[in-house]
Image 1 (cartoon, rainbow, N blue to C red):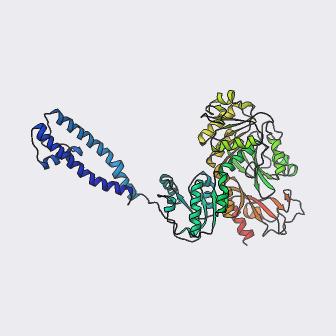
Image 2: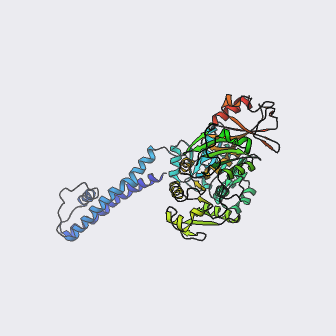
Image 3: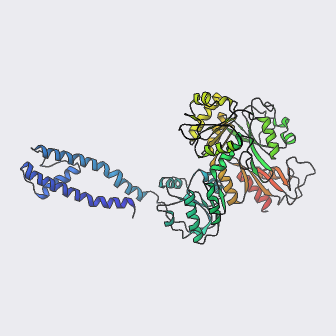
Length: 543
């Protein structure tokens, strides 16, 4: 029985009991206090009229003060009861009858196996988007009703967990293709044991907040672990210090040799004013330009005759050494000064620890006084950043604030105080990235972007790096292209994809000589939209 139904039944019992008790009290008071006896039914009628605030018949005057006080109390209680009645009892009852009911059991099989995600959070935003682009059915188990209903209103398939995890009916769990355990460590452990006890033999990918819990989960059957807080922190730290080498995002790796980086063109860089054609980045530096951010807008394959301007962010792909060399040319990090970390939550603490372990000096700014915080104050206060934190002399500034709006404003403050200091930001939603780039942030990424790409690689079996909302760099085999020149195989003309590099054994080829031919064991790197990549797979791999 639903909670609103129970409340309504309780109201139906308590309301007449209240009327009877108030009526009997009124009858006795009229007899012994007022000296004007009333019968039982007349007293009940008075109680009903008073409590419901509908007015009086004959009984409308009383002589004794005690009677007047009693009547006043009952009148106010009636008004209070009426206002309480509708929001707590009546409205919820009808809402639950007319709104869409959330299912409380796993769905029955329907076509292909679905991906089961336990608990919704920022960590799985990108994964859900990727699954939708691949038309993979996704089912989300969510405990918070408001979140579950919001996801359902967005068109997602949601199971509302009303009771503890072990009370959920897992009859159909065998129809899941994979499970993503995105709850707390102990919730993920419980889900793991339940699934394995019921005979689920598929892949289970578990989020872990405490690294000490990785081994027990792996021992009991987790296929792969992802640690979104640590991975995001590593990505941010690697962009603030060249002493940290990240395989995740500082330079995003695709395969063993190809990396992807975003580089902001510093106003003192020799690249300013140079066109991409004249700069010859592929020939001189061994990198391929995949796109460019300018004024918060991303342009894939920018025109070769377009000059580079201060503040432009170019997205490039190439070997690790080539990316680092071009990075020093575009915007060299200062060799002195601390790295300022604004915000000391989970991500901020991880960033600070990684930088400290790498030998970097750090200054942590946070509103709350706690161990590890060097400057206590609002990071949105210009004085805190300029005078106390010394932002003008910082090697880099890393924003790890919990709200995107605060991050946007903090970026504006930093850019006003220190326009040339490298600025790295953590955001919750990828939609905030273009706004940050427009302000002047050098690099911005979200937890969903980091964790989602890793999970998508496991579940979809596709190696890729997301460059923009609908632009990806993917790795595919050489099927369908063997024996052909990469620029003469008709890939771009037929699919709008572009071959940017070829990995052959321990060599990464980005400069395509005329006599180059694709071999069977080569790995091809393509850049394009999801639709164009699907077209490539259909024309060159499936055919």
